[in-house]
Image (cartoon, rainbow, N blue to C red):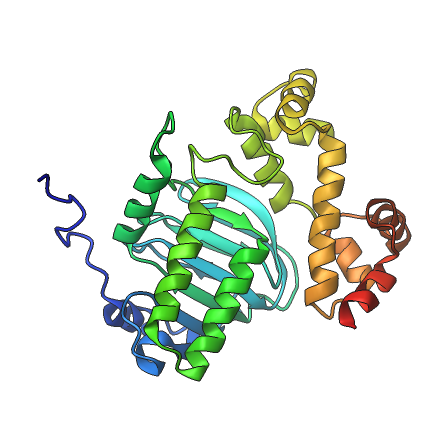
Length: 310
């Protein structure tokens, strides 16, 4: 029988050591920690409050993949993923998915409250590798997670929120293990290379995937066709053809749907005003937002929020 190459323990997951490393960051105060609060050893879940408002955060490098969910605070930032530098809007519900061994840092680019609270989940690299191997079976290319992704994913948010509640209640570690297994499969299926990708994005063109990530990162900006085509490294004409072939929609229509989808989540899950949500999602006014929202959903934003509150 062939030995399992992942059973060597070369990437041993030591939750207690990772928790201690996080504790050394004086810019963040740990509010809850799964190692100390529940004794979980198979994953690390940490709820942290930022104590530093200097406008810069270096998230460092870990030998294991991690997911960082913003739960309080919002601000526009410049983020650096390895050597790449991109603008982004951080707000509650936004999550970074960061592969093992990849550095990540960001700095404020405008006045704001900054990021006040994060939920950080660190997952064993071995578990991710095994899950990727299972998902790669019978596919033309292996499923891997190679680059950081900033996303607003309701599944990621729900799982991490549920884990923080379970941690506070002292739930058995089996709950954490099951949640982690599901989350790894979800992340690899939606954001891994060689995977089908997010709903509506064809797997055959990585340039379209890059453009969609650019849209997600810059929803708050008045994006032009030239901006979108440039993010994919294509001429506007070629970009229109490639994007429509991959998604079934023209870029502007896709972007509007993306903006409305994010706005729906914020209407449901935050106390932000309609005007603030309109601005964060790239609409020039609350009136323009209301018109677009009604066209997509059949309801005005305030009516939609009331319907979800009952």
